Length: 134
Image (cartoon, rainbow, N blue to C red; front, side, top):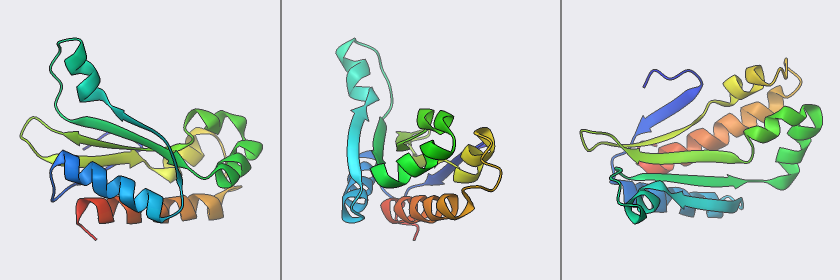
């Protein structure tokens, strides 16, 4: 997609199924879902068109807190987020922040390599499973 720090994977499913699959996988991994924001539904309420755009906010308080103890500014990017959206051609995408980019953004300088590697693996698994590209 060409946006620095953003990983985007095309889904084999429509937006609703992709979002449902993502939410199910997040729950199956024992993570806490903190919010599910349907931006398109919110836009519809005010009479504005918006293609499918759903944000899932989820995390693990223990892991998130450990990162925030290293550098509090990372709290602006935690808990984790994944966006399911539909482009102008009708393709469905799942996007999330690249953990390596987050580490660089917040100056973790290798202090959280193990944690960021685990987050990367988790997000890749969730995204691939939800999009049917595993």
